[in-house]
Length: 189
Image 1 (spheres, rainbow, N blue to C red):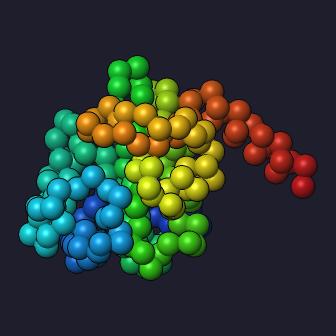
Image 2 (cartoon, rainbow, N blue to C red):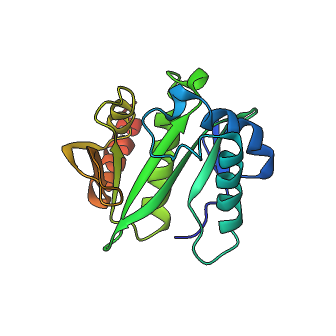
């Protein structure tokens, strides 16, 4: 999959990280509320660890296998969180993730960014299925996945880490059907 250079909604921009995102990213990684349910190491949750993680992501953009981790910013404003995708299984099965600074929760930004990221992946790559894995204790992420059109598949093993979590998914066919229904709804207005 090619690196996303920038995709937008009327409110948000999803783009590669830059060094200017460092202060906000470090704040995010040190926010207990923001990272409570995320699979980061204790070292990555320190200021130095967060800086090293961000730099590794930025450095990966120049290589053959970039880390598809992206900044989410308000269209006319600051960094508010991140989202991304990574391959979890052969056959075009990728996972997506999303996370925001707590002060930007409950404004629909995570759903908006996730919906845009999913649409981009299905339209611009050979992704056949997108999944979202989350802690079963996370009270917010399931709602984002549902509003983005994903189906709750229940609790099961996460293919990358030795943990169990809630999985949501959307296939390419489900996405195309959803997009067709959106087009019909828009035409009926």
